[in-house]
Structures are given as structure tokens and as C-alpha cells.
Image 1 (cartoon, rainbow, N blue to C red):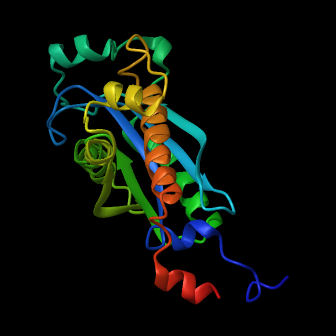
Image 2 (image 1 turned 30 degrees about the vertical axis):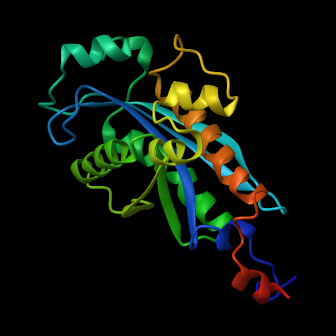
Amino acid sequence: MTDENRQLHPMSRRFRGFLPVVVDVETGGFNPDRDALLEIAAVMLTMDEDGRLHRAETHLQQIDPFEGANLEQSALDFTGIDPWNPDREAVPEREGLSEIFRPIRKAVKAHDCKRAVLVGHNATFDHNFVFAAAQRAEINRNPFHPFSTFDTATLAGLAYGHTVLAQACKLAGIPFSNKEAHSAAYDAEKTADLFCGIVNRWLDLGGFPPPFMLDESE
């Protein structure tokens, strides 16, 4: 089958040509320009032929604090991260982000999408840290949209009446362990399950695709 005759991946029509990628970061504070990025996880999503979203592989990187980075003790106590523990096998921001971005760019192409869009629970926080770190590391090929995000706190407030991740997961029937929370990979995977659940529920309720897209496919 030639490229001209190949059917596009269903994901390419679902989110305006964007590929949703779930991201969670653990940090040394709340200021993306001043405080250290310590962990980043990216959970890939895919879509089956019926238009249902599914969680795919998880990518995780431990990050060394950048030179001069601030580390708030309260943030370290909250996450339980020891930035100087050699067992973390942490790498500089440029290396860690490059390793995270590489499979994202590959997935964007595989799903016939134009670029990635960050999905996060309180997504602005994650988005700001990713972009601040990418700018410090002088990474030009950032796969994420520069300002658009999908925020599962907002979506969960709509779908389940609760914005806290643990409670929203509970209401959605997704197991959640408070002991495992506040690690980037765990929180990203639970956020991915929540996002997939909300999108798929909307599909089940008949909310997608809109009528004009049904007409186009006939």
C-alpha cells in the first residue's frame, strides 16, 4: 500500500491532529525558572479502531538539579526525593529531556499527528517546568504544543465532580495508592488512566465524533 492510499491513524482525527501525551514532573519547588526539575515521566497513549484511548508505554527520567537550582526542603519532604542519592542514576536536563522527547516525536509520526499536546493533572505546572527546562537545555525540537494542554483536574471536575487526582480516580473506579503517589511515573500513569476513562466515557455517551465528521466518513 502506497502512502497516498494508506489510511490515517484514527488518533489523527480526534484531537485536532495532536497526540496527547501524559506528563508528570516532580520538582524542588513551584517556580519553573528557579526550582529544580527532579523527575519527569511521559506516558504514551494510543487509540484503537473503535476510537477508544488506551495507555501505552511509560518513559521515566531522573534529573540532576541544574546549576544554581533552588531546592525547597518542603518540596523534597513531599516527594521523598533525595536529589543527591546516587541510586537515582540522574542525568542532566538536556540528556533526560532528549530521552523523553525522542519516543514522543516517534509516536507523533506513527499516529499521523502534527505534534504532541501535554496532558497533566494541573497541566500548567508540568507544562511550565518542561518548557523552562527545555529552554535552559537549549533543546529546539520540543514536541509539545507551546501553550495548549489538556488538564485532567478540570476534566475530572466536569466528569466526576472532584479535582484531586486520588479522589477522581476513586470515583472513576481506578485503583490509587497514596503510598505510591508523588512519584512521576505512578502519577502520570494514573493521570493517563483518568484521561482515557473520561475520553472513552464521552465516546460511549455519543459525544464524539460530531455529526459533520460522520458525514465526511460516509
